[in-house]
View 1 (cartoon, one colour):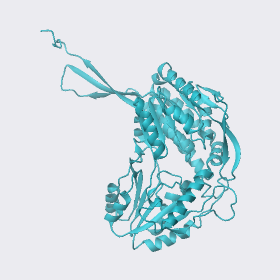
View 2 (view 1 turned 180 degrees about the vertical axis):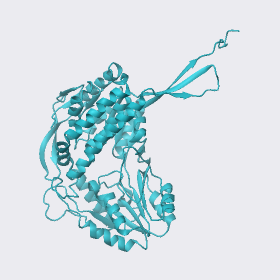
View 3 (view 1 turned 120 degrees about the horizontal axis):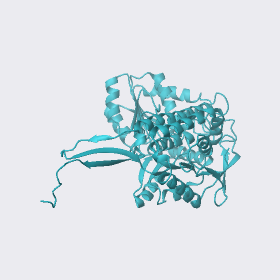
View 4 (view 1 turned 90 degrees about the vertical axis):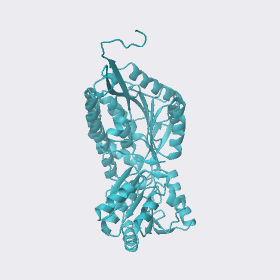
Length: 490
């Protein structure tokens, strides 16, 4: 595992020599240390990326040429898949099969954007003009130097969502992984190096967001900021970007609803509700954490949900059969427990879970938690908890369900379940959210746009929309007339 920063194609120690401990959330043991970058390291990385963009070959390569590097990175991830998955599990706590799934998706993301890079070659849109003396076209070019700041819930996958399209577009980049889960992001530097990526095209800085992250967002030579994380941090990044009018894309929090109508298959509903909130320990920005169930189905569905939630196997993510690992770190664990205690104080009932499971004296483990009777103004119903905690309540009419679903400052995702296809489509259209699932929750595809309404962010990732994040549009207009323009010549 890497112990240095990746800057300008070389592995270097941080300027001030500091490190941060890496703690296994399953055991609470320190098993590694990562370098803690500071402002001088941020400056070195930005200058390397700037030089690679302004003077280097990368933005001037054809899309097909850049695609060969992206595919080599994808192969590098796949070649090291078992090793990287174990690192991810020890770093983040998620079950090993989920870590493997994430890394396969990360490799697929690089392959996908390799294909889009090839499609950029020769791309020029003819613009029809009203004046025949001119011809015009629109071309797309890389924005420049991009900074990507990614969260801890999907360490390498979230990095791939930003690095792959940025490199495909011809940008150079500085990747800042979360300070608690930087290991696989640093390994991405070794994979990029082995793929022959030119120096300065990809730079990777681990360290505290309040130190190196802030230095990167405020750097005058950065053209683009891409961030996934909390709303308050996103707001600060936007404010920093405003100083130099940097391009910004933000994928922020969510408090996503899941509306279940009474005609739904109860067993399918239980499965998708559980996957929508307990997968990845509920540490998912799009988690459907507010479940609204039509009144006739509510009592039996709640009963079945409680029964099945109690069967979920909790354990170390490296142990076979584990479905729910520990939360990522002590701070997150304590924060989720505070949310549960506050919910009870505000009138909620704990129908299942809500505490450390028996037999787990160490590690940041929490039982799958189901809250009922949650007041609509309670923090648990309004705020993102980012843990295995779901709030569930009944509704009487479709109109009420839509109103309750949309009554949030967030708008990242939403889900609806019904056997009535017309109603499901009608409700899906009524949701004020950027991602909507019908008869499921959480499936994510590299080809489809990802992003939210309202305070859940700005812009879209994945698909061609993700590539657009890193491209500028330029108009090129040519005068082809034979006669003088005639402004002063008479």
